Image (tube, rainbow, N blue to C red; front, top):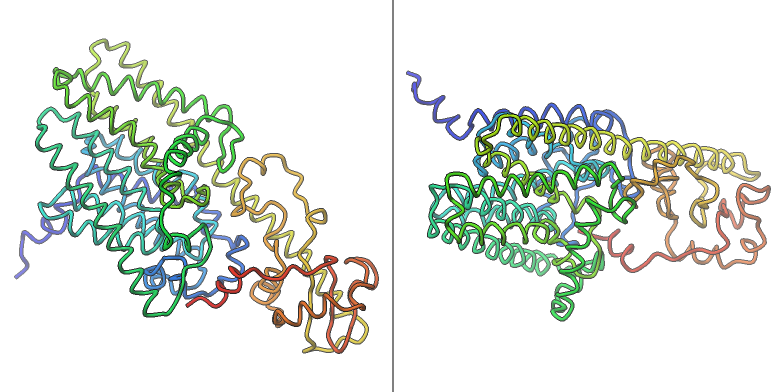
Length: 533
C-alpha cells in the first residue's frame, strides 16, 4: 500500500514561493545563457580543458575533482548548463524560504536575479567548471538554510560550507552575505525577539568559523597525503605563511571601494558598469533604504532600539561580506567571477520591499513606488541579459579569430619546404596583439582576462592547446629545454617574424615558426600547474 502522506513529506520544504523561484531561475537562466549552452566558446583556461579531471588541490580546491564527476570532466555546454541551472534554482528556492519571501512576484524576481546576474555569465565562460561552481553556490546557501532551520543545523551547515569552499573558496561570500540578509530579515519580523536574533547571530558566526576551519583542516590533509604545496595563484601559497594583519584596514577600505565602483562607477576595473546602470543602482539604493525605514515603522517595530541597531549593522557589513573575497585573498584583486555574492545587495532591496508591504497608506504613493521599482528591476534585467551575451559574443569572436589565425599558420607549416608528417613543430612566441584586434567598442566594457577580446590563445602554450585539442591537429608541445635551445640558436635569430617569407623553416629536422623575437620561459606557477594532481 502506498503511504498517502508520502507526497506531502517529499514536498513539505518546497513552498509555492520556492517553486516560483526555482522555475523562474531555470527559465530565465536558460533564455539568458542559451548561447553559452549551445556553443563552444572557450577562453584561455578552457583551451586545455576539453577533458580535465579538475585535480586542483594545489589551488586549495580539494573537492572540485569529485563534484566535477557529475558532468564527466568534459566540456559539454548543454549538460553543464542544465546541471548549473538546477543547482542555482534550488539555491533560489532555499534563499526565498530562508528570507521569508511570501510574494510570488518577489520570489520569481529573486530567482531571475540569481540566474542572470552577469557574474554568473563570467562563470559560464569557464564552462568546464561552471557546474561545480554552481554546486558550490548551492552548498553555501544550504549551509545557511540548515543553520536557520534546525537546532543543531549550524553543525551540518559548517560541513556544507567546508565542501563549498573545497570547490572554490570565494563562495564563502555567498554564505556570509546571505547570513547578513537573514539577520536583516530578523529585525523586520515583529514576532522575533532580541534573544532569538542574538542566538541566530551566534549560530551563524559559529557555522562560518567552523566551516572555514574544517575546510582548511581538510586541505592540510590533502596536501600532506598528496605531498603537494599550494600554487602561487592569487597568493594561495602565502596562506600558510600567515595573514597580513597590518594590511587589514586597507583591505577593508578596498573591499568597500570595489563594491562602490562595481555598482556606481562606469568604466571601473573588474566591472561592467555604464551610466544608465549606475543610475538604476542609485534609484534602487534610495528605494531600498526608504522601504527599510517604512518596514521598521510598520506596526511600531522601530520602537525596539535593537532592531534599528542590528539592521544598521547588517546593512553596513553586507558590502564587506559580499566582497569578503578581498579579505580572504589579500594578495590579489577579486575578478568579476568572484563577485557573484554582490547579487545579495539586490536581494536586500527585495527583502526590504517584501517587509514594507502594506506599510504605505497612500494608494497613489504606493502605485508610484511600485511602478518605479518595477521599471528599475525590468531595466536591470535587460542590462544583465545584454551584458551576459556581450561576454559570450566577444569570446566567440576571439575564438573565431584564433581559429582563423592558427589554421592559416599551420597551413604554412605543412607547405614548408622539407616538411614531413610527424616532424616536431616548434612555435616560438605568442600571437602578436597587433595582428588580431577586435575593433568593437562595446567589447571593452566587459574586457577582462576571462573575456578574451582578440584571441583565446594569448600565450605560447595556448597555441599548442588550440592546435591539438580544438583543431584536432596531432602536434605536441616540445619540452621546455627544446624551446629555449631553439630560441637561442643563430638560425632562429636570423629568421623574420611570421607571416613574412622565411618565418616558417625546417631547422635541424624540426619545423620552426617565429612569432616573437624571444621565447618567454614558463613560470614556476605554470610548470607546477601542468603537473598538478
